[in-house]
Image (cartoon, rainbow, N blue to C red; front, top):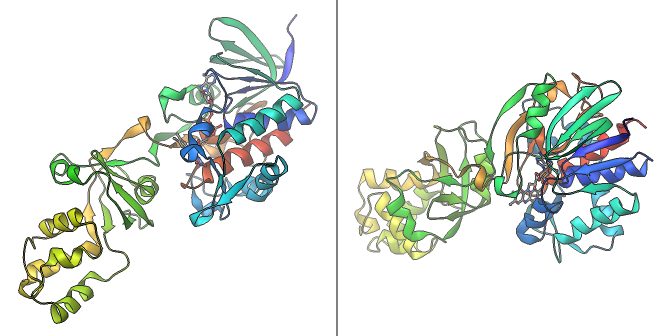
Amino acid sequence: MKTFTDVVIIGGGAAGLMCAYQAAERGLSVVVIEQAKKVGRKILMSGGGKCNFTNMEIAPNKYLSQNPHFCKSALARYTQWDFISLVSEQGIEWEERELGKLFCCHSSKDIVDLLLHHCRRTSVDIRCQHKVKRVQTIDNGFTIHLDGLPELYAKQVVVASGGLSIPSMGASGIGYQIAEQHGHSIIPTRAALVPLTWQNSEKPLFSELSGIATPMTATSENQQSFSEPVLITHRGLSGPAILQISSYWQPGEALKLDWLPSEDVAALVEQWRQSHPATQVSTLLAEYFPKRLARLLCDLTGCGDSRVGDLNKAQLAKLALLNNWPWQPNGSEGYKTAEVTLGGVNTDEVSSKTFESKKQPGLYFIGEVLDVTGWLGGYNFQWAWASAWCCAQALKS
Ligand SMILES: Cc1cc2nc3c(=O)[nH]c(=O)nc-3n(C[C@H](O)[C@H](O)[C@H](O)COP(=O)(O)OP(=O)(O)OC[C@H]3O[C@@H](n4cnc5c(N)ncnc54)[C@H](O)[C@@H]3O)c2cc1C
């Protein structure tokens, strides 16, 4: 005799835990299957240990998806204010940082503890170190096949298994496999919110500058721009502006980097030529950049040790290019360091209200496994909370 749980949730991450307690609160029996030793590992490592759990400026245009309308309903029904209330009711202290990002004041663990507290309160059954291998449709529900353990039976299955980023933390493609088995298409995936790497010829030039951060505007070929700090690393460029633009960058494309977004460099150089003609360009650039970076920019623009009054036309043109510097990354650091995965389960085949599959009744997809990817800054967790909440309200008892 098979015993059917109302809901089995695959993945004990942000979306899975949120959906679990919300569904259990409605009286449903809920089992969460998590392959890692502990739930919520990405939450724990997020936001430098302080979890950037949402953003004050949540809006659909800050999400990438083949269907840009898909995220609208959930984001409107479960807003950042709903999650802020949840966090505040629990007495968790939080703070707003730049660009509307909300972080815990103490630790990311506060958010995991909050979710676990509600899961315990509502008697959610969380089973860690159990890996889901396959989901099979049967009469009245599903069989969930686990690694080396007896199978489970559920009336409904919620796939909350996340994307492919950080495989060392348990990321797996199981969600895509389950989707494909049930007739879904997958929008091709790739690493996003990820550092971009130097061409081999650039490595020796920049590697000595590793650790230097500078404000920059990075623009993709499709004219998306981000003005935030950039960090020079041994492998390439990182920092918020690069992570953000990486989601809009396609391999083989060039970016435009504005090294000095606060100034019109051509006009600035013209001023210098009037006021300080005998001063070396590197000295003048060092007012805006760390010395070593100013030196390298002089070399890259062919100015070397030239005095600003002696610059020729070609040098002037190259200096002006600092506002519009073409850079073709060699690639990205990939899933090993990416914060998120672009692409995923095709949202045209999932209800934006209930998150139920349009191909297989009783099967649901939430969080990052779907083809919805947020900007850096708390947008991805808000998507996890919102999609999970909406799904939990729609699950049948
Ligand atoms: C380093 C880092 C920092 C981040 N910082 C932020 C931030 O500050 N703010 C923000 O908004 N976003 C941040 N993100 C993104 C955010 O963590 C994710 O978008 C979010 O966790 C997605 O939630 P999810 O529940 O869909 O997937 P996940 O949180 O990835 O959860 C999926 C779970 O499913 C489990 N699983 C996978 N396969 C199986 C299987 N076969 N059987 C059983 N379990 C399985 C995994 O172990 C995992 O626990 C960060 C990501 C990383 C990697």
